[in-house]
Length: 78
Image (tube, rainbow, N blue to C red):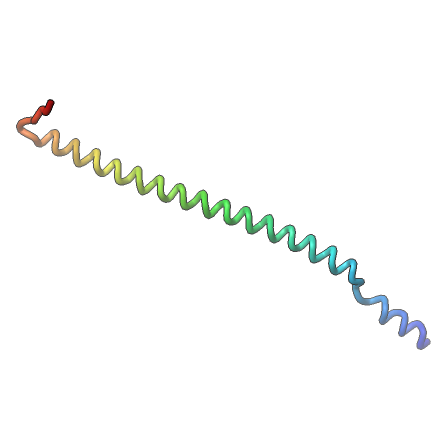
């Protein structure tokens, strides 16, 4: 009876090789997730900058159009 209890207690844990393999797999998955997350952040930042630039250009063009329509004369410089 004692030998069966002793043997069952020893076989319930993980070996060092199993732990190292599982930690390697977990580390690789975490690295892939982080790289995907950082790629998304960079893409969002670039889109935010592009949208802000487009908004500024639209505002500038609207102001130029309004001033052109409201102007009573034009200066032509050569």
